Length: 159
Image (cartoon, rainbow, N blue to C red; front, side):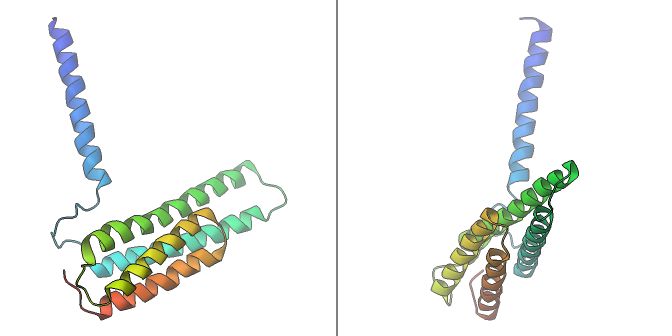
């Protein structure tokens, strides 16, 4: 084996390991260990911002779609707003599952059933927000998120 071959193989292996480590840490916003870094208030603020982004995206998609003719730029904007709307709906789904269901809602918590039902509805309406440009699913996400926030923050829960 030549030295060049060994160096190239080593560089290739190093780049794969580096890419895996970098990607793995990037994909996992928080690691589901009880570190206490993330706060509930911040999480709710982010979720509320995601809902507002979905609402605005849907509104702009409806406005652009109502034009008689679409320019290339209009079509590109439609794609961007659609992608944006779906990404923020997915963030809500992921945070509801990964943060609240997996980490924050304990079996012995007060109002366990109501919290789980609200989270399920948040996930369902977020999914419907991805599938539609109508305002209703996003409004329902906002309504269910507000109800969950009130129930979650106003009652004791184990951290």
